[in-house]
Each structure stands twice: as C-alpha cells, then as structure tokens.
Image (cartoon, rainbow, N blue to C red; front, top):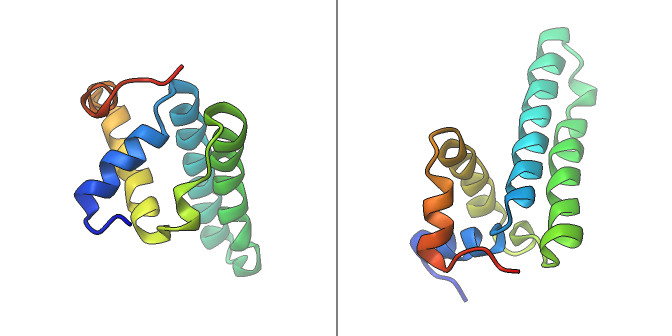
Length: 108
C-alpha cells in the first residue's frame, strides 16, 4: 500500500512510462477541461459529467490498450487527479522524460 504522495508519484510515473500514454492523458484532460469551461460559459450544468467521460476515456484507453495496466484512479482517485495535472505541467516544461528515466525508464 502506498502511504505518501512521493511514493505514489514514482508509481504513477512508472504506470505512465510510454509516451503515447502520456499524450493520450494530456489530450483527454485538455479536452475535458475545454468542455468544462464551455459548459460553464453556456450555463449547461447538466452536461458537466461529460467532462469526466472525455478525460477518463482517453486515459483508460491508454492504460488498457497502450500500457496494459490498470488506471491508478481506481485505487487513488485524488492523488491520480493531482498527478495528471503535475504530469501535464512536466510535459509542457519538458521535464517528464527525465522523471520517467529517474524512476526506471520506459517499459517495452
């Protein structure tokens, strides 16, 4: 059982070792956020659940098809959400590749 966020982050990075997985997470989270802002702008609160559906569909496809592992969201929902945004920031700033190497590199 993972007890600290630091331990979880290393686990999260290993579970997102392939570039395509990270790209799909980035795309899904970005599209989900765009939809969220759009729904708020239009005042269409009843569409709010689509924000989650879009974000998670990209991520879960990546886990089941690309990484062939289970999404960490199922066990650690809060830390997973925080880590999605942290990973996005690391990707934008060009640091995610170093994180993957630091925790053990890309799995074949």
